[in-house]
Length: 142
Image (tube, rainbow, N blue to C red; front, side, top):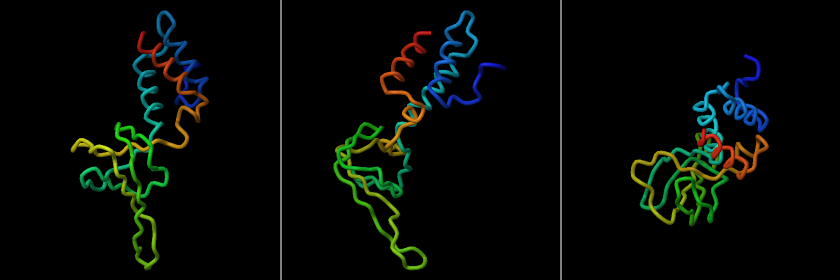
């Protein structure tokens, strides 16, 4: 159907879908728009599977973006980061893991550490954080 993007990849796509959702009757499902916004928000973080936990230290696969002082998407502040080298099959040292020490322990059922992305999905789309927040507010009021 004309006017419906297959994927919402740009700010213009998002605004077009918002306009269609605001039409009377709505020409675009609000639930789909809300789901798309959730995906955009999730793109603010790198989703790093947790390999192990020792108190407040979480081990993940190598993540160069992790840095002390950041606040994770899980709500915990990173106090220290150590990149771990291991020998591969040929005996060459490779950075394979990152040990992230947090200010507080994560809940025991946490499977993923959310490290802030250098460039977020919203930024790649041409959206500022404030614009995305405003659009989300409009969608939630529909």
